[in-house]
Amino acid sequence: MTPKEVQDEIINEFSLLDGDMEMTVFYIMELGQKLPEMNDSAKVEDNIVKGCQSKVWLTAKMENGKIFFEGDSNTAITKGLVSLLIRIFSCQSPETILNTDLYFMKKIGMERFIGTQRSNGFASMIKQMKLYALVFKTQLIERA
Image 1 (cartoon, rainbow, N blue to C red):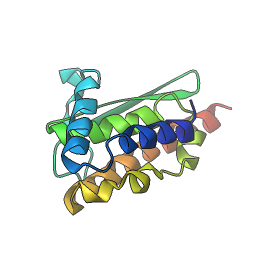
Image 2 (image 1 turned 90 degrees about the horizontal axis):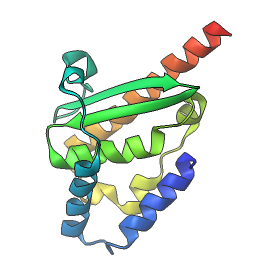
Image 3 (image 1 turned 180 degrees about the vertical axis):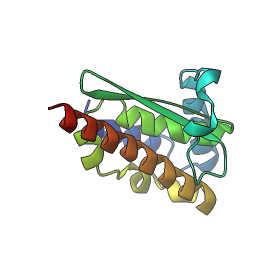
Image 4 (image 1 turned 45 degrees about the vertical axis):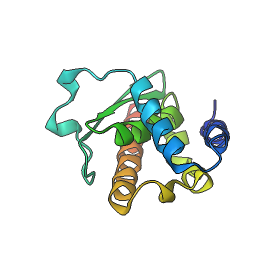
């Protein structure tokens, strides 16, 4: 699926919650619970996303021209937010990640249920994922 298709799918899922704040928060936490466990050996200082109030670990690897992300957090809501970004960006090319316009947050009204601090952290997660994509893209260019 393309990042646009994944975002549209996420928007559709959240629309079923009909704007109910409590249900939305529970759903985000549920998404975080479904995120595959991150190995403790990856939960090191170098993998912490700077700018997040909670601890967020993020790693990326590239296989066959596609980037695969792994992430975790020490809080349930933040872990759910990480899982949404992983769902959109994993298994995409560096170029696709760099060119993806994220619009799902506005469409689901995310600002209503996450505060300013968490919004800043969410932006930091996006920035980190795009930074990984830029590094992998640069490596591909250097190999060519």
